[in-house]
Every structure is written in C-alpha cells, then in structure tokens.
Image (tube, rainbow, N blue to C red; front, side, top):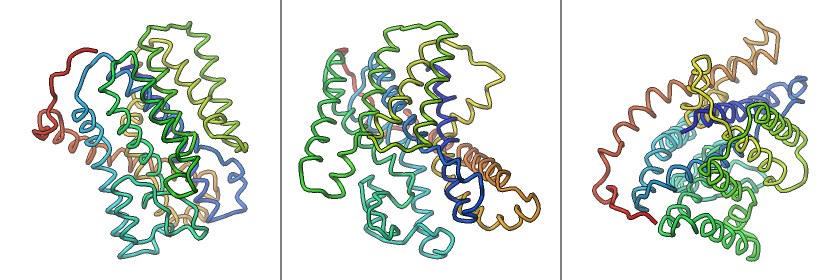
Length: 350
C-alpha cells in the first residue's frame, strides 16, 4: 500500500488533536489569542475518504468472504475502542470530575459499544449524537460503512461501487424522508458519501493513473489550503461539499504519484501507524492537561506552548497505546487465530 496514505493518516490525527486542544484551551482561558485559530475537525473527513479508498484497493482484486472482511474490520477497530470506552465509563463512575463531558449512563454505554447513534447525556441541549468517547462518532460511521461494504462483496467487482452507493443513498433518502429522530439525523448526513468518494478514488488508483510530481505538489497544497480555509470558516453548507471535496482532492493527488518510503519521513509513517491510537486516546490526555495548565502558564507563560505541549503529550500517549495495546492485541487476533466461523473461505473471482 502506498506509504503516503500513512502520512495523511498522521496529519489527519494531528489535525483532530489540535482542534480538541484548542477547545480545551478555550475552556481554560477563553481570552487566549490562539483560540481564534480553531480548525482541525477536517481530519476526520480525511479519515473517511481514506477508509473508502483503502477498502476498495484491498478488496477489489483480493476476493474474500463477507465474514472474513467483517472479522478483519472488527479486530482492527473494536479492541482499542472498547478498551477506552470501558475505561471512560469506569472513570465516569468512580471520579466523574475528571471527564467533565462524560456521564455514566448504562444505555448510552451499551449503544457506544454497539456503534449505535445515541444522544449524549452530557449535552445540556440534548442534540449531540455521540458515544461515550465523543470522537467515536466517526467510528459509528466507519462500522456502518463496513457493514454495507461487506454485504456488497457479494456483488461482482464491476458493480460494487454502484451497489454500495445505492445502499448508502437509499438509507440516506429514507433517513431524510421519515420523521426526525436520532437515527434519521445520523444516517441522513451527507458526510457518509465521503466513503463513496474514497472508493471512486481507489478505483482510479487501481487503474494506474500517474501525475507529474510538480502537479501533485500543487494539487495537494491546494487541497490542504481549501480544506483548512473551509474548516476555519465553517460555512453553512453540507460538510461533504466544504470539507469532503478538498479531502478527496488531497487523496487523489497524493496517490497519483509513487514515492519511495523516505527514511527522513519514517517518523511520519510511524505516526500514521499509530494514528488510531492517537485519535482515541488523546481526549484522556487533554482532560488530564487541565491539571498542569496553571504550572505551564506560570512557568512557560504561553498558551501557544501549552497547546504544543498538549499535542506532544497526546502523540506520546497514542504511541504508547499503539505499541503496548494495538500491536500485541493485533498479533493475537491475526489471521492465524481467526475464529472458526470467520476463517477465510474460498471465494471465486468475480
């Protein structure tokens, strides 16, 4: 798989960490000038497009059973997510003052573990649809996409993108036609089509499209420029248009060139490998950062350095989670240890 995807994963994770670090700082010091530079939520849109891209290029010419596909996704996503969710639930039960936006609510916890959209009980307005670990809302979309994509593995490859799009589009239309509800609001969001954009880009990539390096550099720079600009200004338009489209532009250009695994960029690839851990654990790190804020301001006297420190700490914790949890658990749940009912079946080419 092209290494630049890992680079983009790293950037996407750091964008999200920065976004939440600024929000945390706003709670601690609303007058801090750096809080005016609020952007970074677009990192999840990069993840969505990447997910569709990766699902396509890893399955289009490697036939596999539906059960095998789902098992691979489960063993990649579920262990760490369940671990941090249960850890957050424990903290919310024992020392709730540490995680201020988390409440111990059994139905909410069960819905979180099942990747079901649910109103967050800590939201005073009663409008936020999010699991116990708030950033986990993206995983609800991921698992929904994996469910539909896995079903469409039964469809011949040449019709698969159309089939997935039809399923997603059908649910989207129904969700926007029925009376408003939590599920309708969640599955009726245009953001889900960012996965479709990723699949289309994956098909283009597999077709062997190549673009000259200077054009790629301009395209990627333009994509990130528009992404950050739209993210910062938060235009009142569907997210698919304002952020999803520049995210797709970035993925298109960055995968239209073959680049070597540069030794100087191995640290960025490592951050990409650990991006899932960084994404899921950074809210714990940021929550703990409240305790050191007075010391940082008293010693460093800089809110900017505090944000940098929060990002560095979040990255370090994420790397620790990756090496101490993700890697060993992934090895245990590797293909050689598949449960009998999901062992790879022989699938003929279609």
